[in-house]
Image (cartoon, rainbow, N blue to C red; front, side, top):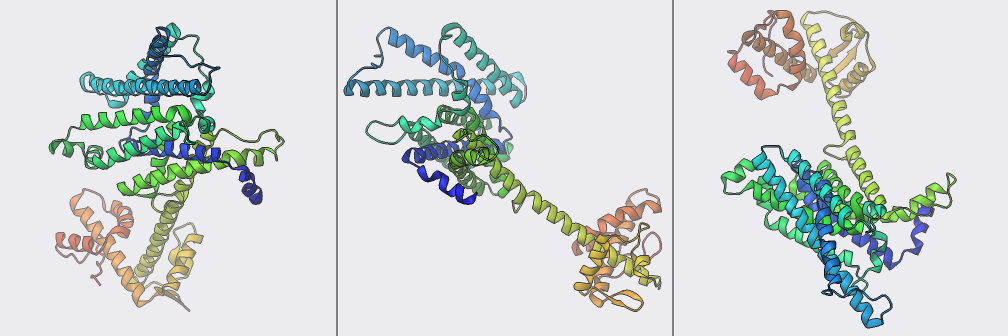
Length: 473
């Protein structure tokens, strides 16, 4: 299968290159504001804005149709010569610009209305945004029904975009797709704005009260971010569709957040992840459907939607980061919990051996380590670990503490009994309720906390049960 995967894209052309570039630019443009929205817990803002721009698009479309009817704009001529074809393409470009401006203005109006409702209506941000985008989306549908009912709206185009055909809509005299130019400009604009207003965005995101105290206006910063997001969504919507726009607003930032806790690193990683997901998504769209479907009885399936596969690939990258991220991955979390459980088990065994030696008792391994349910495999594993670390050694009379093991055990038991005494003095608890809490806390009291407890308790020598508190090593 690997050789088949490598030979499938052998027909890669310049069109495929531009499809990948356009998708990568759209994804990167969305990832920049999307990372800030993720940190501000507003990730679904892009979904809301993609609905809110509908009335602006409809009004712009109606305005262009009216200007063409009255002769202010010349309609494209289908059977024209070369000069007329160029004129027709210019009109198409003007139409796209007008639609973009109308959609962007609609998004800005949605941002202004949501801020107004949040401030004067005294509702939370998500509720204000929900009121605005549903109302504006309904208004757009009403305008379509009343004035543009015969306009054709392809649901597939709305969901998946026209990414596969972007390579054919190029600038005059070049092979550069218009969508690549539009999304590339949005990457530059978003990058420039984030660089210039980095401090303001950072303060408004993590500590808006401090930002307001320093003269920043959190509401204005939020409005600018929403406006940038609206423009980005509109720029990317036509070429990549709603699915990829929403995915790229959320997934790259979420994946970067799993990989790093530093804001600057997160922003850079989100760009890299977005671009890689777009490029690999197009490669997978050309290769995986035929490879998989031919083996399950559907040989007629040759490829898949590029935008949809880009979204799936980005989600796969998120799952991979969720599993293997060095900071927040599931595997790392399991390993940390396993190491902690093993450390606690080792320390519990050291404590039991120390208390056994205190009472001058002898016994077998099972008698010393048993908790009433026999000796489990984890206890045996912990014992072998202690032997390897030379904290205990075996003899004819069972396991005994080495010098280093006795020192570690004394520290543990000292923590346990200091905490029991602290609980007894500060809380009205019966003596039989002290041990269970101290048995958990003893593993997390370092030397500094031990010293503070001992000083507060006036350097005690016995615990509430009358047992000797070991001296510090």
